[in-house]
Image (tube, rainbow, N blue to C red; front, side, top):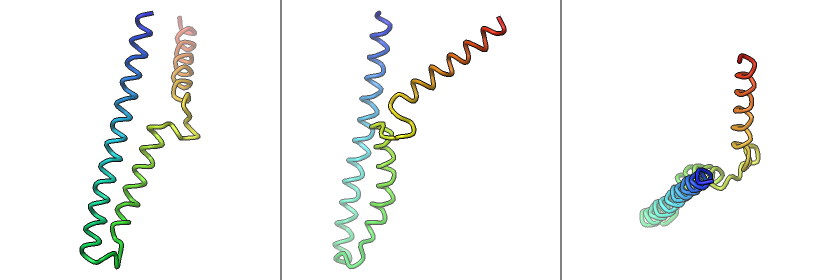
Length: 100
């Protein structure tokens, strides 16, 4: 019983850490892109909005991070990892049983 509670607590802490990393990444993105946009405006008044190249490229990374953090990937859904771990453990158990 106590082991199960510790396991849940550990998973919850890992999840919180994952969320903190994402929000930190997102905050950095917003601040840096805002700074680049301001610099772009001050240098050429948005005649050519070059900061959008950085925003787009980094935005792909942010989107990818969000997909992983919030488990939005349709191919590797929320329970996919747990199912695969169970599958591999069962396969390992079955192969070990054959040679025992």
